[in-house]
Image (tube, rainbow, N blue to C red):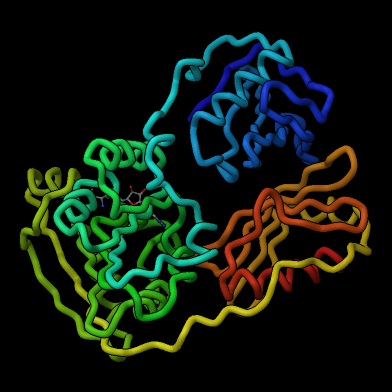
Length: 390
Ligand SMILES: C[S@@+](CC[C@H](N)C(=O)[O-])C[C@H]1O[C@@H](n2cnc3c(N)ncnc32)[C@H](O)[C@@H]1O
């Protein structure tokens, strides 16, 4: 993660503009002095820089929730802030010359809004969830130029590595998305996907709610797959295999194929490692047997006029509200010069969204972007609107 280790943090006078980088405002954690967020806009993209001031280390770095589409923007923002605020840099992994040309050259990298606005309208679409080094995804895209492949990953270095290959191999049938695949599934139209690959997902033995496979994920997978289309799960974890099998088997109108220690067209980095260790590899393939109803998501993310008080909002820090299928957790509260900002996680229990909400006078808004328009987020939004005014 890009960061600057600094001697002392200095505050600029906000708003502040320098060479295309806009520093808009600063948010101070209301419960601890050592954390601040600085709102930045570069080329119409908004994100935060995070200031951490521990006793023995002071850092200016990326805020994980609002990472922009390119690392280059983070580097620009960090160096620009440091220069303008005259910060003394003790150590850093950010350099002026760092340029990821691949992020600029290829347009394979899409953001979630691209898919939310209009999902690609082509006959054959395959998805790979958590492509890692991308060996399988790139191999498939190269060998099947008439199929559109969408690769979803949350690990930024893997994404950048694969984008580099997309560029080198000049692949024009591959789109890459930096997003949680569990949420992405909710906005795919019904009955359009030809195949879903999930190869060696993280087993998360101690945090099952973080697993990709869950009842709600399979529900969405069944809805988006064409009739007779397949979801291919490949895992080296016996635990994950048993858990997945037990989750799949509860579904009607699917058939399941189980295989053990079978080779597939290409072996991933992980697979090579497990094979060397002589671990068993399990394939669980779900074949969809129903034609699903069209995806229908009604509602919006508007807030009512704010009528409560800032004092009440300040007390929300660390509070969790649970409802039937959704929840809202107020992770942190920040004070702004002219308002309050809340960092929340909300939505369904197994695929929550992490968001900032800003309250200024009577206005409430999400920052910097709206939640993904999914059923669970819309329900959670209604509850959130109620809590803020409660
Ligand atoms: C163990 S690696 C396997 C990578 C690759 N499929 C392979 O076989 O080498 C699992 C990958 O899934 C990604 N991942 C985990 N949860 C995810 C999610 N909810 N959405 C998208 N990617 C995810 C991780 O970042 C990681 O790169």
